[in-house]
Length: 248
Ligand SMILES: Nc1ncnc2c1ncn2[C@@H]1O[C@H](COP(=O)(O)OP(=O)(O)OP(=O)(O)O)[C@@H](O)[C@H]1O
Ligand SMILES: NC(=O)c1ccc[n+]([C@@H]2O[C@H](COP(=O)(O)O)[C@@H](O)[C@H]2O)c1
Ligand SMILES: [Zn+2]
Image 1 (spheres, rainbow, N blue to C red):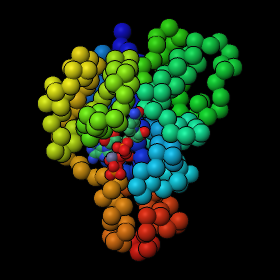
Image 2: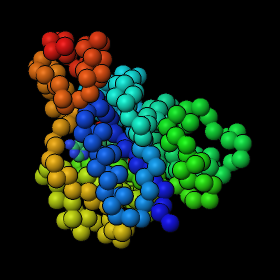
Image 3: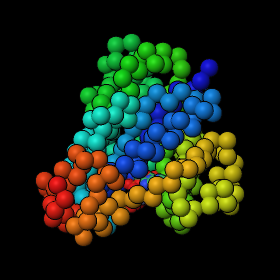
Image 4: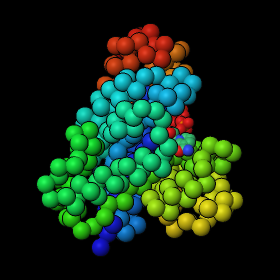
């Protein structure tokens, strides 16, 4: 029997790009092809304002843009749980929260313990998709650069990396200039849990990044076909990222 999986991507989404959405598609295809997993949903969890990364705009805008981008998406949902906490939350806790909530929800007969905000990111027809006796695993979906950041001294606690890889698992999309197999080989923890790390090669190379989008907007260059049209409209409406509203 296939294990039901939810793919959760955390990050700044400053702003969301087409590549963020592509990641889910590529990962789901890959997991289904592997045969052991049934991807029942995807979740985007934008980081809290307190993360304080350079040029990070308010979570309200980032959440709104994701909401618009997901209007036509029938399986990836937005979770605002992380962004609405008191302060920044470690990725391990985000994965645990979502996995605990969904499994508690599946087991409960009357669903009394789940609040509205958590219902928003759950897959449609979740009971039908899973039944009550199969545990859902929430895996971290990320790009190779995020995995590489595991090696930055002091950034991730070893026990968090161990819990993320051991208890949840990673689905990593390749990115230019990152040698994933070698990076994993150089890490004892990652090598220990190799079976729980799925590397998905992006053969239709796509190096869109939010940094490049912000740069283009600052320079009043077109970002059409790189981010969803509704996100472009939103950026122009609120003059975000220094955009001059020149390409509507
Ligand atoms: N072109 C891409 N290929 C593979 N993974 C990507 C790509 N763009 C973003 N990701 C992944 O999406 C997740 C969210 O990343 P993030 O919000 O930092 O986006 P980003 O485009 O890398 O932004 P920035 O340029 O501001 O760092 C991360 O796991 C990141 O690795
Ligand atoms: N220790 C941790 O859990 C930890 C450390 C650094 C970044 N992160 C997460 O990684 C994601 C991407 O961060 P960057 O945009 O800085 O690459 C964010 O969602 C952030 O919360 C988690
Ligand atoms: Zn990034």
